[in-house]
Length: 320
Image 1: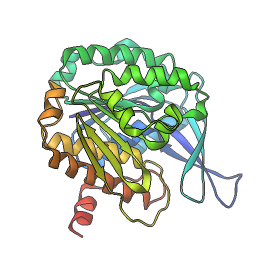
Image 2: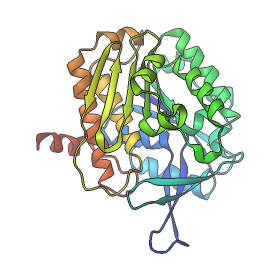
Image 3: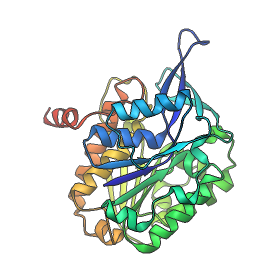
């Protein structure tokens, strides 16, 4: 089972033809990962703090209607987080966030399951990242929890950077925070835009090597329409992109992340002694997992909003 911890918020999407009009849809990178796992019919739990306000009820209904498992999620007293989004002609979203003291960031230690509870649920992986790990005060609570899980070597920790400069973060502090989290992660995913914002024109190979720190970690860099690059130790795989009719890129990286984790779990690549599991994977199997993840993300880009493909839809496209 994969546990996804993080934000479930409301995206208020600006209408391209009537700029004063916005449509409220459920979003949040981590909620999107959980949604993509549900569409793949893969065992999972979404560990989020969901408000009881009007928007929170919309979030909970949307996730439940899409078979996202919410047993671990918290009923939060604070209001829902809002993200105003505009989609440009290339389908890329830009955001403005309203995040002050909202539900997603107010974690308490007693809201997080301990190692025994996770073991009872047969959790192989904890997926985390994006705004949840950038926003105080909750990020410090989750970081300490993740450090305990890392020390146990009882499961895989998977970090998707998903940097959001729009919240006003400072580059140096973000870099320090992210590199600290990478040190306790076995799987690390970033987009080319993430790396360019953090490191400027530093070569991707050098960034990946630094993040691995001499260990057989899995580092994945997504490159939009050009596909992805996957590193494991001295191995490097170039995963080509897929030609599509682009609608927008909302949720594409989250869809990629979820489907990569599913494929790795099917290969017994996730779980206890996580580095050993990644090291034992055949490079051909990693390549196949990457190709399926790229394909799933491409399908999501053919749709408006975060609409990950189902297991059946992915299989049909593979057969084609």
